Length: 506
Image 1: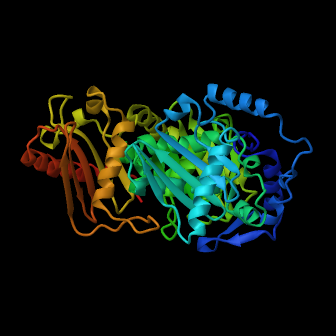
Image 2: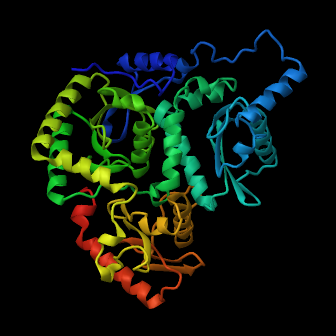
Image 3: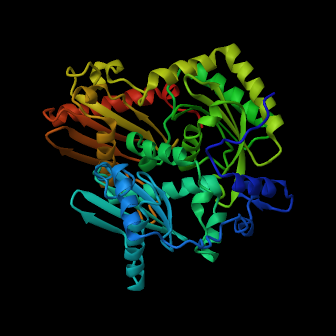
């Protein structure tokens, strides 16, 4: 038996000690959805972290020349806004406190960008003083979007073509990912003590936040509010699901998830408390962004903001197949359940190895890449064919009832020199044009069938949206509208007929 280990790159040592203290106290419990008991960190304990008061050092600032030299060095290394490399990035994400203290920057170094973040804080504060709030600014090719969440300000600056609503949603998800690591306890501390240094608690988690950003670029999960299932034969998936349900029951877990890369191979959850797709997205980034999880069986606290933003669940994590990145997660409300979950996971691995289901999931994960369906494997009447032989370039199909989507592979678009990073923002613009979201950007409710169509020099785009399905497809710009409509109808019929292999049972 491998003893539980804490993932090194996740949180700092001081905060780990606080987590352990919180988990060991029987009185520090909070009732989450479904009357489940979850460990919670008291905000007052966070304040006791040594050095969190941010006291000023005795030594004053160095000479002006020294400061200029430091800024020049940062620019040469691409760590601040004076660097040409830094300026050429297509998207920037920033997090700062309401007192202007840097917390996180996707590119560069937070310390070197302190001046820029101070300017952001001044802009936001100026608008607040006027009784208004700063939502977005357009500057040439860039859109700058602002979000205030408690004592934190989150800012996105992008030249990707994504609409404001999608960038706003990404900031929400970035905030949720921080809660996934720390819970909202740290926000209570920041509210009481503006000098508290949140970076000490987030030390070493850049990989997790970068994994989330990568998913924004190549995965439509965020704006679709859905997750990508792993395509595999229905009978083998059934074997995985039955084994996973048994492991959840025997281990006393709340949820069970089997991931294959960024896709979900099997999911076990209660009907009264299903996992929110955005919690699944945060959980996937949490696992993929922590390489230490691949070393051994691991038991780690994790917060699911849509379940309870103030409490930790406890995740047993083990890579059942490292080459295909097939990872088993069992989430429990009990901080002392590692041994029981490990025993249940061992029986799960034995059962799926005997049935061949694990090997099938590994093969499917290795073959899937960034999509589940190859255009060349489709029937000809549904747009199937090799690149250049069919007008269908790519498609995206969502099953709203299951909160899952099917994505085509990128072969046809790659032949035209288009990358996923170029196409996913285009889908985001189509989605934003089809649906109108409320001010909190909750999941939109589609009316009966909506149709959207537009054509550019690169491709013709069409979208169908109803309560039963959503289809977004890209075609050759020279394709006739009648042919596009006929292919879409047959493509939807093919997906519906293949649901058992494409989607995870709920």
